[in-house]
Image (cartoon, rainbow over all chains, first blue to last red):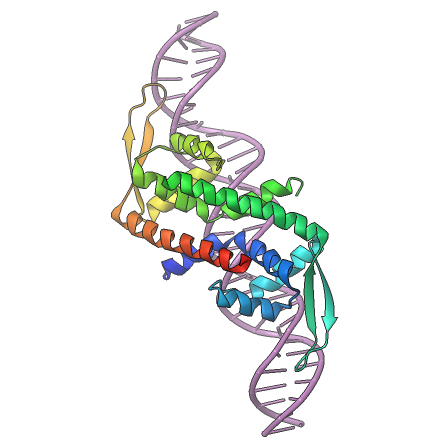
Length: 109
Length: 109
DNA sequence: TTTTGGTACTTTGTGATACAAGGTATTAAA
DNA sequence: TTTAATACCTTGTATCACAAAGTACCAAAA
C-alpha cells in the first residue's frame, strides 16, 4: 500500500504478462532467465517466482514446449518454444489487446 | 476453461477496470448501473458483483466520494464523483497505461 | 391492500494471477 | 572443499473479477 505507483503498474500488468511471453517466444526460443532480462529491458520487471509458474502453466496448456540445452557456464537451460496452439492463442491475444486499447481510447474520447 | 477467448479478455481487463472507472468519473458523476451501461457501450462488459466492490475500494482509498440522489423511478441512487486524490491517481494511471502500451510495442517491434 | 416487475445496492465464495521469500541443483573457479 | 554465479522450482499471501446469491426501494397493476 506504500508504493502506489508501483502497485498501479503491477495491477495493470496482470493478464498482459502471458501476452508478452508468447510474443517474445514467437520471435525466438528462450529460457527463463533470458526472458526476464529482455522484459527488464523494456521496463516490464518480472521476478522468477512469477515467471516460472507462468511458463509451466502455458506449457501445460499446450501453448509452449521446451527442450534442455547445455549452458556455456552453469547448469543446463530449459529453452521454451511456442507451439502452433500457442500461435493461435497469441493471435487471439493480439485481438483482445487491440480491443482493450480501442476501449480505453473510446472512454478517453 | 471452456471459453478461452473470454478468459483472455477477462485477464487482460484486470487492473484496467479501475482505470476505466476513474476515467469515466473524471468526466461526469455517475451511479453504478449507469457505469455498467456505459462500459457495455464500449464493449467492456462488467457485472454488478465486480463493480460494486471496486467502487467501495476506491471510495475507501479516498479516490471517490458519493452522494445519494432520488431516482425518477425506483430506489435512490448512489452517485460517485472523483476526488482530488482520485485525479492524482488517474494521472499516474495514465502514465502507467502509456508505459504498458509502449512496452508491448517494443516487444512486438 | 397485496402483488408484481423493475431498479439499485450488497455480500459470499471461488478461481486465477503476481509477488515475496525461500529452497534445490549444477558448474567452474578460488 | 568452499565460494560465486547461474538456473530452476515451490509455498504462502494479497488482490482481483466473477458467479450467484440476497436485500431493499418504488410504482403500477390486480
